[in-house]
View 1 (cartoon, one colour):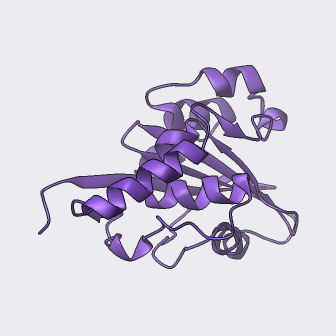
View 2 (cartoon, rainbow, N blue to C red):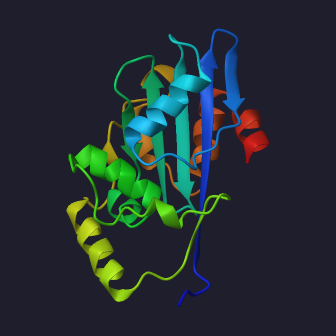
Length: 181
């Protein structure tokens, strides 16, 4: 039995090129790991360019993934415990916490429109609670990942509400973000 609970995600891939920022029309349907997300970002930009993936779940949490060429992706999550209760958030928190594979990761429940349907059964609720307790309450990851774009650690840590719009505004691509929203 499923309920009417629907979790809505928003994700945007922004590429920093020599001509400025560009938004990429990118599907996250086949993304199951941080490595998948990094590969997707690399495909959208040139070899030496930077991609920034912004992900949010209904203002509950936001994440920033930065991919610079072949370097390992850098990740920041605004609230790891809350993010660990969602599919994309679990993918990011598990990577940051060094978990090989989460027992709560169920990307198969994601619809093509970026929503997550259904009420988890009691066993899944307990697994989600366990995953959330592994993740710290509050920020997790590299809060300095956007410093060279003018967003220092203190600013990133203080963002709330529509943080993705604030980030896009500070790095000079708010029009692009709104166009893909």
